[in-house]
Image 1 (cartoon, one colour):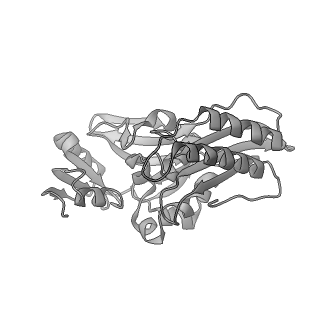
Image 2 (cartoon, rainbow, N blue to C red):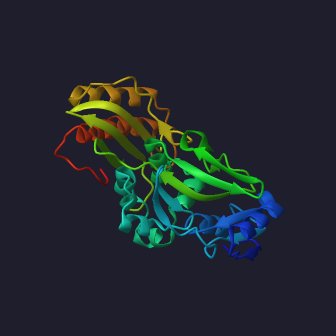
Length: 287
């Protein structure tokens, strides 16, 4: 199929882009990488009246280190972020699992975050590390924390006239260890389940830990982890894995069953935690 008819605009400044979004609201869609939006348009699942291409907007293609972390502009490609390294271990571990080299060469980090697929890697990474999205509109700017960003499949807290201009991922410290593990049917597919773990470990004991899962809820899901200060080892990994398997609420769909996803959650959470608690192990990649 072909997309429904639409108008196209290619602004060169943020103010110009924000003006277009203010004028057209929910009838406009932002184009950055287009790896998710354009297939949806071709299938007529979405029918924007205006496509606002932000690739010519100055200042959106830079990646910088700030006091808040690694700041990736809205048009920073996934491949560029992977080549340059972000300083956030979980993001660097998950990026090679996103799509394939072709889609990563065009797809953007911020675009994936805003597309809000609950099975995708990058929204779950943002949640696990406690990152945020920098948002602008003609009325002003604001910061949306990852925990407040996602409202459902394909839905975020952004209004129709708002533009996500950058995402910030906190930088790792010396005691940060992280792991991304996922299980999918084929390389490049969205995972059936993905798990991100970020732990601060001192002398083999956990000072703090975050665990987040992709593919098990309608939004990226943060596992409810109790106070684990001072804990460590395989007992901790098994305990958190059992909590995750018990508390998650996956659904049956055309790709697999809820029961299968629950098994995957238990296994991947346990394995990821065991690996970050091993001081001599560097963890990346797919299961």
